[in-house]
Length: 146
Image 1: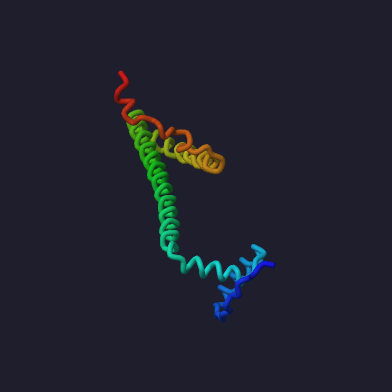
Image 2 (image 1 turned 90 degrees about the vertical axis):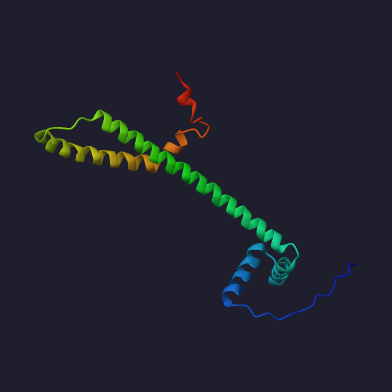
């Protein structure tokens, strides 16, 4: 026969929302609410609770840092892409005389609509430019080429 330690009983007042979360959690785990509450209190009062919380926060901060790093890279790619395009466009597009400029503006509006449509399709389906550009590219390799 196994001997069980007698546990002390306490009365606790919980907010309705907390009580519902406790009941839902216990139901999903098929455990008693008392056991869940005991484990939560023990975890809260354990001497290493602060270290666990700090480790969890550090892990989340690392995830945020990685996301920000990827965002910074993606924004850098977008800015450089735009700069290269604008430089190329300015270097290769001559100014038009006024009679032709009016027709060119009308044609540009039509071409812009097609561009926006194509961009929408690409954003919806992928692949994204950032997926096509290797992160392993040596930024100084182009400068060293003869």
